[in-house]
Image (tube, rainbow, N blue to C red; front, side, top):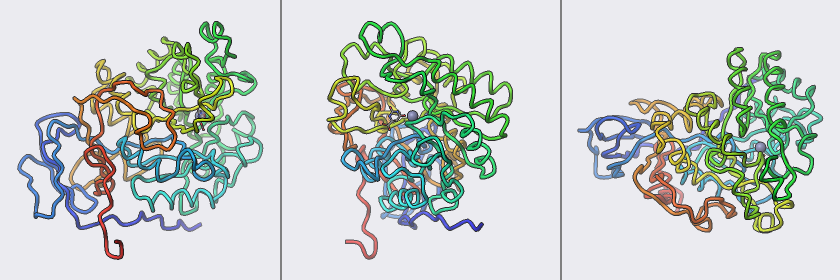
Length: 453
Ligand code: DOR
Ligand code: ZN
């Protein structure tokens, strides 16, 4: 099978960008970084703009990191463009410091065919703000029964490298086993939404004292943990890699530690909301706090932070999940699960991990860029900030604070749980293959090229 060309659309090559006064990984003395075309051309305090056309970005006081990679985002195109499109979601991603995102398959139609996955990739390239990698469905229609044509999707222009039924669990152990065996031969990754459906019928909140008091049907930790343990064993036997979406419990962390100690190729992500929020948020019955898996207890939050710091949890992934007002501003039990996350992720990681001193900026680069790029096998993302590397970069102002106004975010939907919260740190600039996609905290207009007006 020949591998089709998947060249990214050209950026305005030949242009130069100079970022001045930055601390690379937040370390050492301030320096300047020169980008020529799509490549980092020089780094040093004496590096200057080669000509007057060079775009200069003043990075004084700021931290330079590799562009962020989100393994888990919902962009709702095709099907629910009233809540998010590849264009609006790409803008949200770029504003959040991302240079690559993985768009989940639970669209309408489902991304279970190469027609859909290729469309997602191509549309992302057309928009040009971030690489939008399509995630293919594991099973046809996310129904959990028949394997989707993973090989065809992997061989398409969108070169699908991650498959997931996210939103649904691949619950049948035999289907999951076959998916893992197939994934091994294709060298692709299965990302599992770990939720044993027989244990979560009607569940809307974490099973515990809060849900009991509020009269909400509970989602037990064991529904997640039992699938994580099962999948670790299935991955071991298949010799395949498996990735755990949105780990949410202390028990999942323990199982991951055990599985890693056995040499099983299991990786895991945690969302910003599970690092910050707990089920005390449910007291108001505001459905903005409904999410799958649910917000857990403080002890789980603490365990997740510790596991992210020590590497048991590999990375942060947003599970950015836009929903329309009518699906959120309603009774808790009928609201759709999910919350926005792309534009606030870095600030939540700073609030929960950097400010408390458990993660430094190198650690932020690891969990938001390097590990996700490694897990997804992206060779041009999560790279060291060094001369000769592709310039996928994020510039962060570590000292600022900002107040979230959910209506002002780039997403079409407004379901941010952080509305009116004041958060630390903000992405000021994002660079995708040498092109400045975000400048001064706003999406930078594309410079006109020949043929464009
Ligand atoms: O809260 C969630 N929302 N969890 C999921 O697994 C799916 C997602 C969505 O698609 O809205
Ligand atoms: Zn999920």
